[in-house]
Image 1 (cartoon, one colour):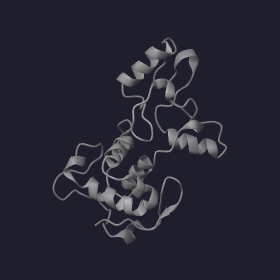
Image 2 (tube, rainbow, N blue to C red; image 1 turned 180 degrees about the horizontal axis):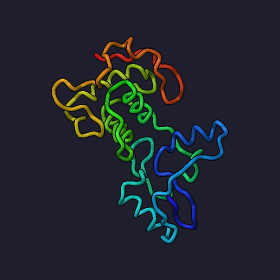
Image 3 (cartoon, rainbow, N blue to C red; image 1 turned 30 degrees about the horizontal axis):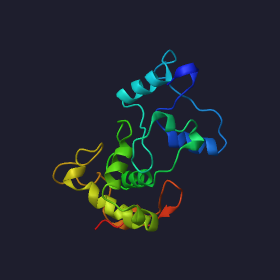
Image 4 (cartoon, rainbow, N blue to C red; image 1 turned 180 degrees about the vertical axis):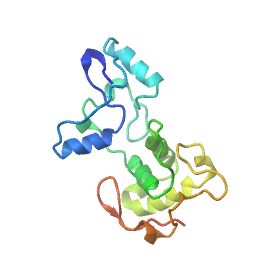
Length: 181
């Protein structure tokens, strides 16, 4: 996305780009979705918000002013519930979705049901709780949710913890198992 004064804005894959930048990669291929250089900053952010192309929320799930959004990839804050949602998807809790901010929608759902202290203290147990929550009816409206009888797990994913050995969290540490019951 090209914004006011020709500044490039990233609409998706922020965390992947941030990781690549931290590894010293200085160049990435991009696709310009739209050129909005002609808009004022206020009109630009309103347009992005109307189209669902921005997510002005902090790691606590609280909406923030557009001016509070990080200006650089390196300034992105960590949302531990997004990391939990990512682990949940990798372990078969829901399908990858092409919709915007799908992991953040899952993160918000998990944030409403899991205590931050549990997530901080015991990530593996939080993953187990998240797997249970993903199978509940109130998760059916979330992007990539498995719905309907008999479709609570992704095809090819076994429920036993050994089938999920040595998965990695977003921070790179290993998840040796994920309790499901």
